[in-house]
Length: 345
Ligand code: SAH
Ligand code: SF4
Image (cartoon, rainbow, N blue to C red; front, side, top):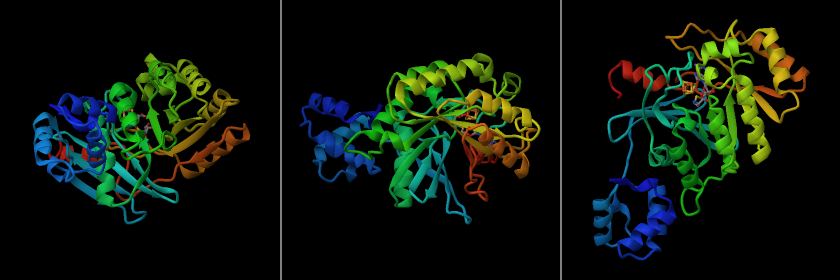
């Protein structure tokens, strides 16, 4: 059965006309769906007969909250959802001065195998549909009672490995009549699938691209990110240049600070040389320790020195604030713990 939340408003119109209904019903239905209704019954401005026909024809996905953790430090909320086939994914809601920002997963697991990441430890289970990614946003908004103003695709999964569904999701969230979040309020983070970055550039979207660089040399990067073997740094940066030239959007580079691995002084120099003259911003991320990985976080003074070295060469860099430090708000960690305890798929 088609998941109704995967359809754009225009596709809904076409289906309704095929069903012998008036096309304007599509707007009503789309609005209900984006409010997070849990059954067609709730669509009170539609006839009972139409509600019944929709229920026969379409699946209406409703993720169930398996676990919810609220940080006592900063109010960050971490959700673990169970989907209709039993698979579990997580999302995080964060409060910023400019509004509520949500971080969503795009796959159940991940096949990229980065050594430091809890999400990829068991490989890829399946892709999320566009509607399931949208559900994370809709149901966090509903549960929190606060309007979401920003979305980051930085939860579990490699968004560009689930390209078509992610693109459809971007179309759905920015479409008038629904939750309607502008593309400039959306960031997509990728481990660096260069050919997909170029394909994304050609879509001419206004979203922000974040690239998980994490090391300035292929030897280090390939050792922690297998994707580097397929797309080495010079290939990746060529794709990033193309992305900027095509969309005019400055790229944000994520750089994880791992002790004695990515944080050595020569690596700051090398990184500055790679990015100098590019419209770029570097986000230094303190590594979150994962039990299965030998990597350890850098010392705070090393992070500061690294940042200063970049700035000295004219590369702007900020140190990412750690949100929800008491609730493990890092990629994949809630799902992983639940899996170990046998409560998640
Ligand atoms: N797959 C995409 C997006 C999801 S991961 C990507 O890799 O970019 C989101 C971010 O969290 C990435 O920058 C990733 O490298 C980072 N990350 C994963 N595990 C981490 C850890 N243990 N500590 C710090 N950052 C981590
Ligand atoms: Fe996948 Fe991103 Fe984790 Fe790498 S860091 S395994 S790409 S989710």
